[in-house]
Length: 320
Ligand SMILES: N=C(N)NCCCC(=O)O
Ligand SMILES: [Zn+2]
Ligand SMILES: [Zn+2]
Image (cartoon, rainbow, N blue to C red):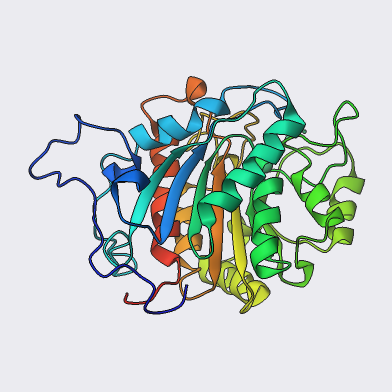
C-alpha cells in the first residue's frame, strides 16, 4: 500500500479496560465493522463455506468461531514491536453470502466478493471456509499483481487433480491456480507438509508444478531461523499471498479442523515463521479450515485468531 494512503487516526478495537471482552458485538478482535468506518486499509472478512471438503465438514462455521476466539487479542504486539490496529485502519468486513449447494456459483461469488471488497487498494485477510476458496481469492490477487508468490502453510499439498471427478475441492485449489497461471512458482513454497499421501507421485507432481516444500520433518532437524531464511529467500521481493490451512498445526494445537494429520507444527513454531515474514511484500492472506464442531475450549479458534493477528502485524504499510 503506498505511503500516505493509510488512515491517520484509525478507529481501533473496543477498549477492554472499559467494556469487558465477554459482552458486545463479536467482530474480529472487537474491531469496528467496515460499515462503521469512513474506509479501511485492511479488511478481515469471512467466507462461511465448506462444500468442498473431503472428510469432516463444519468449516462454514469458521469465521464466527475465529471472531469469538479473538476477543482477548490486545493492541500491542511485542514480538514485532507493532500495533497492528493502530498504524492503519483495520475493519471487520462481515461475511460473504455463499451458495452452499452450487460449488461453481460459490467460487464465482467469492471471486466477485473479494474483487469488490478489495477495491483498488485494500488488503484482504480472509477467514474461511474450506481451502477451495483459495482459488477465487488468488484470481483476484492475480488481477492486481500478476502471478503472486504463494506461501502455502498446510499439512496437505492441495495440488491434487480431482476428487470423485470434481475439479473444485479443498484438495485441488493450487492445481487449478497453476493451470490458470496465477502463481509465480519460482518464488512459491509449501510449509508444513506431512502425513500419508496417495502415492509418491503426489510429491513429484507438486514439485513439477514448481512448488518448493519445507516439510514438517524439516522443523525437527533444522533451526527455526534457518527455516525462516529459506522461506524469505524463496519469496524474495515478490508480492506474497499467504494461504494458511490451520491443519498445518498439530491436532494438539488445532483439533478443530476437517482433515487432521499427526506430527504437525506447534503454535509457537507457526507464529514465529509468520513473524519471520516481516518486511516482505505480503499482499493478502487467507486462514482456512477451522471447523469449530471438533474444537475444544477454543483451542483452534484462538490459534487461528493469533495467526490472523501476526499476519496483520507483518502487512507492509506506511507509518508503522
Ligand atoms: N485442504 C485440506 N485441508 N485437505 C485436503 C485433503 C484432501 C484429502 O482428503 O485427501
Ligand atoms: Zn490441509
Ligand atoms: Zn489445505
